[in-house]
Image 1 (cartoon, rainbow, N blue to C red):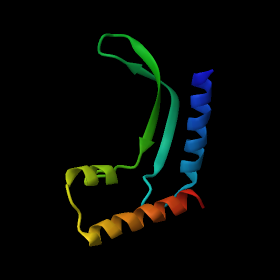
Image 2: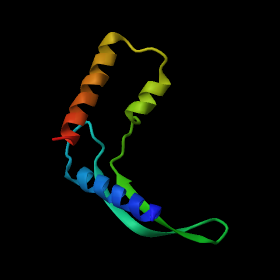
Image 3: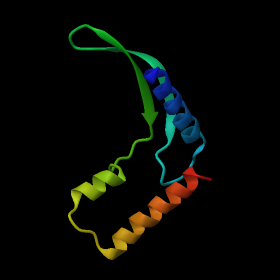
Image 4: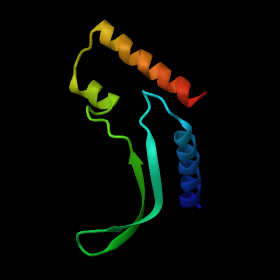
Length: 91
């Protein structure tokens, strides 16, 4: 089923993220696959809960969206961090 396939893909990503320890990759602390989520209307859903490291200043996308233009120096710094993170993910 499509749901089963999506769950397998998520499991693969989660497995990979649990092995990564890098300053430019948000750390995955844990996953609860079948959490019971109570809605305000009293109904309930089974959901997946993912616990991630807090990024107090937001993620890179937040930084990009908050500015219209970056200096060349800031752009190089963000690009370098992205490349380091991608290298860590594919190591």
